[in-house]
Length: 418
Image (tube, rainbow, N blue to C red; front, side):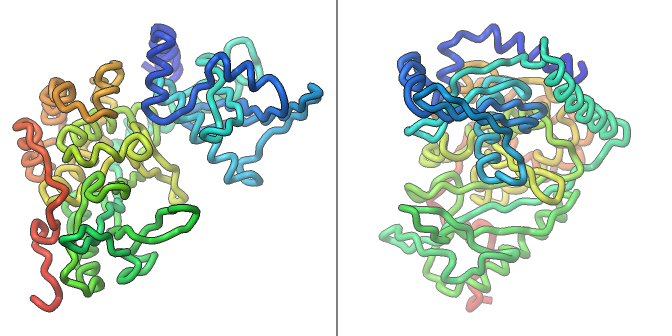
């Protein structure tokens, strides 16, 4: 099935979805949907509306329409570069809206709202029908994606992976978070990352940024180097290091994986969601469930300047070497074989809900079949030594413990102990 055929198949699935389910899905990921009463209210007074055309997970056109109470209307087209911040914010919301409903292409109408910034007014899953200019734009996007996927399939492209997983520094027994910025610079292999609280930017989170590699073994070696650098820099040895989804309330952590050498597509994102994010959500300590939906939503990605993209759905997998090795190995395996991974349990409403609510009983029903697909892939034997221990934990139904000091598990000693 080519890209155009898959787009039409996605539209049919969307059309078979009840209105209530569409709204529930969007609410689960934090997208505001305007109610009928809200739509009526928005018709009066000053209105700002955006009409976003999305093709292949990116906005190809954003039209802004400003309407005053006197019914005078001004229209403009946002420029990706000139209005970069606004463009990106509107683009991300529109892409997130469509992706959550199983679509990679379509038109989303948004209205400025006092609640979350913008509310979804309507969705057209097939905007390319009947409008010549839009048909041309969409077909150009589809052809470009199809060509890229065909080239990868023909040349058996090897994906290159990077990462920037996070951890916290915690003073016990009071569980006080100590800002990583006390010990680490903002840049470098071992640095700190920011959060904004009450309008003020602080840097409480430690982040490892090992050099990328196409080989899981080499990437993990680079990760250990970053860990050791952090150990030498963090001179307060009384602090414990914690990772996972949310080891300390109010500070969610991410385990972002960077991909290059492979084309960003809805197929790849859904394979990562179903074969990696879903199993990891089942394995995660329940105290980390609060990370979603503000962070860790399905299909969360950012296009990067180096030509690849960052997959942002996963929690910090630094909880143990077993988990980190398995995640790296499976991410590499999935990225190289995603066209052969066709199961989509997250397309089912109850599984989608289970992911966001942390319902392990529901998720567990689908884990064995997903793991069987992965272990049957050509090339699995090359990553078996890294993936097998994680797969065994998943089959046994275990969870990790986010309260532990990860230094002990990684055999990282304080510098004064060396």
